[in-house]
Structures are given as structure tokens and as C-alpha cells.
Image 1 (spheres, rainbow, N blue to C red):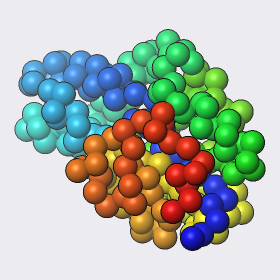
Image 2: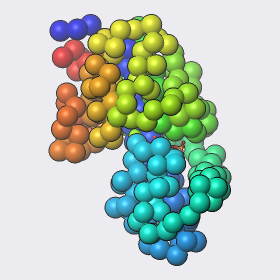
Image 3: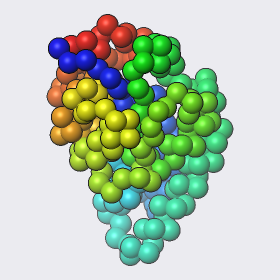
Image 4: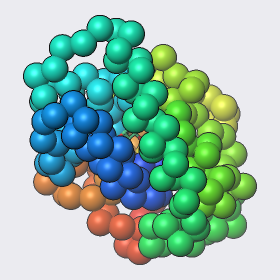
Length: 215
Ligand code: BG6
Ligand code: MG
């Protein structure tokens, strides 16, 4: 059994449910472009970078546009998304997350963020969780998207912890793969069938405890 010295958390879908805000913003864009964008389509964008998400959305609508136009649409979607997340409050922290952070702190286990989102710092500030994090790695500080392990390896490096002593919490398949590719343990958050490559899966942090980190 390896001693766990750090936990690295994905943000969207693990700490907060921002998928609903991404959905509103992407759907508004699809409406403007004149095609249907459903909640099922939105599932395909979880854990995926902003520009890759736009490409997937355009593929769904069979829309072909220039790179310049893509940049404009991505910025437009992000403006709407930001207007939605600016209204977020600490009440939107998913159940059990903050209590688990407190028990990690009390036991000197470091906490890092490993998110693809460039808006991660703003969200953490709105939900008042920034102060728990010993390191924050987000979409602004990485070159390679999950399943590349860069985002988690940087987190471990910033914390000064060996990757094998880190546990990653992830809700997206690509995120679970990124953790495995980085040589880290991974606890899935969500559906056990979807996240079947994780070491084990919880449906939420009310099921999580320090004891369960020892595996
Ligand atoms: C991920 C989300 O965390 O961040 C994706 O799961 C999102 O849905 C990605 O596209 C990038 O987010 P942002 O905030 O930089 O557009
Ligand atoms: Mg996620």
C-alpha cells in the first residue's frame, strides 16, 4: 500500500456541476447557427477543451467555417458562459466536497486542481474554495489536453509529490486515462460502468473518507 500525500481534483463534474452552464452556452450558439444541440450531445464535451468542444459541436451541425470564425464563436460562447458562472455561489459545491477537503487538510494531505478549464480560477473564487488549494493547474497552464497526463503531472510537480503518491478524482473518461497515463491512482466520480478504468468509483463525496484513500 502506497502512502498518499496528495489529492488532485478535476473541477467540472467533480467539485461543481458546471456542465449545465456549458450546455446553455453551447446550445445558444447552435440555435444561432440553426441546428439542434441536445443534452446527449453535451455529454461528448465533458472534459474536452473549449476549441475541441467547438469542433465537435460544428461537426454535429455539419457546419464548416474558417479558423478566424471559430475563434470568434468560441469567444462568444465563453462570454455567455462567464456571465452564468459569475452568478455561482458556494451553495453549488457538490455535497461532501468541502468536508473532504477539510479532512485532507487536517491530515496534511495536499490538495491540487487539475482542470482543462481556463475559467477554473474564477469558478473557485465564486464558490469560495480557492484557499484550500496548494496548487492550481488549469487550462491556462497546459499545452496538452487529457488524456495526456500533463495537467496532473504539473500538479504533482508543483506540490513536490511523487505521482505514485497522488490520487486523482475525475468524472470524465479522458481524465481517468490521464491519471493512469501519469502513473497515478484514480477515483472516478460518477457512473461506475462509464469510468471502469478507475481504481474505484464513487457517486459523490458523501461516499468518500480518508480511510478509502488507503488502497
Ligand atoms: C472542462 C469541461 O473541465 O473544461 C469542458 O469539462 C470544458 O466541458 C473545458 O469545455 C474547458 O473549459 P473552459 O472554461 O476553458 O471553456
Ligand atoms: Mg470534469
